[in-house]
Image 1 (cartoon, rainbow, N blue to C red):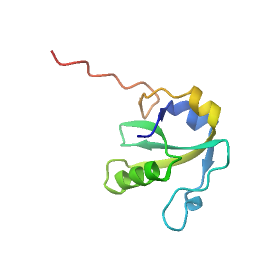
Image 2: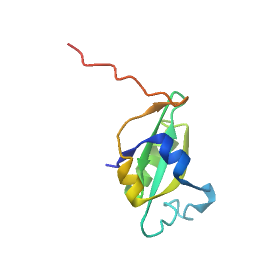
Image 3: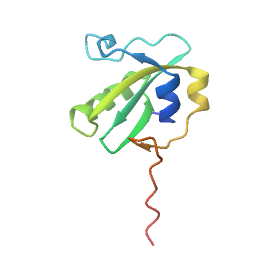
Length: 106
């Protein structure tokens, strides 16, 4: 299961990875030592950032994009230590505002 990171810091601090950097076989782009590959995905309403450095996590997320769960995926490289510091598991609306938790059913 991939780690979830804070979206805004990934978008502002990460180094964008061009789509053509993906491997010819559809695998993830090469990740330099000391870096993490992070995908920011959105469904048109909210977005999330997931660490997809491991090929299995990348493949699963690409499949969800092909299946229409996610409308868009952008890749970023982020320093390993910074990625660990901004791990938070939250998602945000497309305008950057936090998504409200629906609360627990009684």
